[in-house]
Every structure is written in structure tokens, then in C-alpha cells.
Length: 149
Image (cartoon, rainbow, N blue to C red):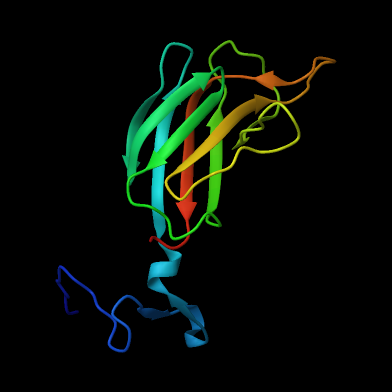
């Protein structure tokens, strides 16, 4: 078995594009398109927000209970990038469905994201006859996919 060691990979026909043959040798995937462009694992407890580990994230802002803005170091190419999130309930916090999603500005409209920042709100779902509400999260993670500028 041979070992390939390199510091830079460049496509032969297009410098920023490398196709990788998928399983079964029947499809190809663009390597750059498939990479996660930014991610963060954070603690958004009641007292402060802090990033435990991250890639391409420059800052975190805690606006209020469960209301956070995450700023990306290297800008995305446009505002149509994809993201996925996950959260964990705090110790002794009310249990129920919980989600980290786009921040709603008090109406039915989500706040506008930019190529370098996205605002999220952590909400717990209705449970046991109680309405859902914003809630800080003990641990959360966000991953961004799309094209960098």
C-alpha cells in the first residue's frame, strides 16, 4: 500500500474543483461542495455563551435567553447556504421537544442572515399542557454547508 502526502490538492482542469468517485464507481462528488465550511460546538448556559470547539467561527453573541448569533470567519459566497443544528437540554430544565433554528423577530418573519453571520433561537416545545418558550441550551452544535466566497 502506498501513502500519499501533500499540503495542497488542486484540480487539473479547474484549480478549485476535485471530483471524487463514489461507492460503486457509478457517481462522482465534488470534494469542495461536500466539505463542512464552518461548525461550532458551544455551551449557551444562562451566564454566558462559549465555544468549546469550532472551525471557521469568529465570535458568539448571546442576545437573550436562547437567542444567539454565530459569526463565520471566512464568508460564505451567498446567503443560501445550508445549516444543521442540534441541542441538549440543561440539567433540571423542562424536558420536551427542543430545537435550535432561525431566530424569529417577534412576528412571523425570521431574521435576515448574512454571508458572515446567522442568528438562531433555541426553543423548547409545548409539553404537559404548557406552551413552549425560549431556553438556553447546555450544549449545541451548528454545521454550515455551501460555497465560501
